[in-house]
Length: 138
Image (cartoon, rainbow, N blue to C red; front, side, top):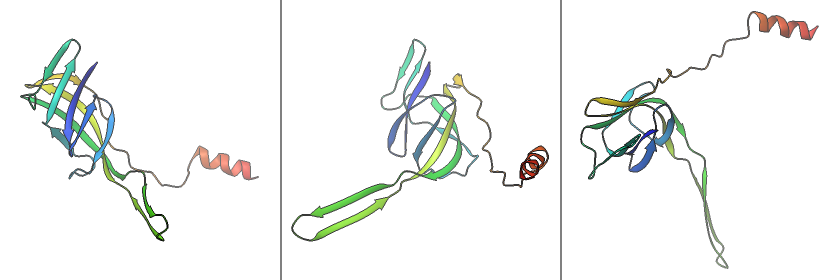
C-alpha cells in the first residue's frame, strides 16, 4: 500500500491514489489538475521517505472534482440566569480533491485513473424508459 501525508490548507492529511478527500477551499476550478509539493511522509511497500519538514522532490498530483459546503455546525452559547443566549451556525467551504499519483524525484510510485467530473443530465426521459412509464399509466 502506497500513501503519503501531505499538508494543504493548514491541515495534514493521509492520502492514497484513487481516493478523494474533502479539504478546505482551494483556489482552483473543477476539473483543474493541481500539484501539492508539501509532502511530509511517503510510504511505498517497505520503503519510507521522511521529510524534515518536507520530502525533497516529492509531489502529489490531484484533480479538483467539485466545490461544496460541509455539514452545519451549531454554536450555542448560554449564560444561565442572565437571559443571554446566542445561537450561530457555520458551514465550512470545501473542495473535493481526487488524488491521481504520488511521485518522488520524477519516479511515479503509485498512480490511479481518475474519471472526469460528471455533469448532471437533467433531460426528460426518452426511449425505453418513457415507453415503460406510459405503459404503466394505462
